[in-house]
Image (cartoon, rainbow, N blue to C red):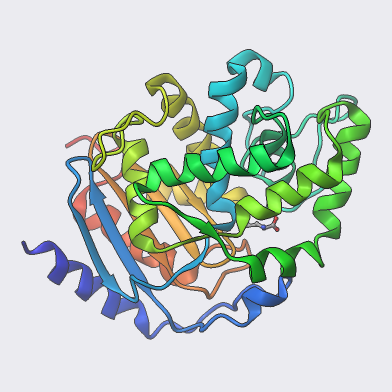
Length: 306
Ligand code: GLN
């Protein structure tokens, strides 16, 4: 297959790019090796191609958000989730204290406020059960059993005042019902799940495949839930850079502050990139360059007639 050679060439092109900085507001993330770079591409037929440091594990961070949102949608239904979380782009940073005036409803599930609310909507009778269901859901997407990086969890928990503030505010507004400290801890735990680009490419390919994991054949989520989640990723997945991303790359995507980005081309492939140096929006610098190039070379842009 010519695909690995092609991916290796794309990787070489971006490897020298030293712009951006690793996230440092979570102490454990500041320790990341900034030079790591990896790309994985998984097809809806179940093939996967990886280049670079593809076996390296890192925390999923905000790329967890669409997957938890899909679990909440399946558990509660579209209307009940929409009553508590909007689907409008915020045009603001991922950690902005942005809640709808009057109601306290977060604008969308891809910013922290909405993701914390989505976590609280995962059906469970205890926080342990909720954590377990979330982890099992991600594992079903990845096609292997994933785990939590405890050192990342503890590091973010000890510095998570902003997210705790959001949790308390949403509790006061009645957007979340459960104890806000428990909910935020659960959200931080979901962000600390450890993945490789290979895992992420399979997770993205499951979304590309309308909710059926290409390798295991398991239906992980309903097709109508996938359509909804991909729509929200398209308008909100890259935060205040979402419009720029849509014009240049043109596929639903989600980034995380550890340096990962996933992209989904419906019906075809899931792509994942990892490189820890971030731009001012908190998106991986090399990751964006890789995605722009793949989109151009492979004709992935959704608005492009082929
Ligand atoms: N866990 C991170 C936070 O809540 C996730 C942010 C991100 O990846 N953009 O701050």
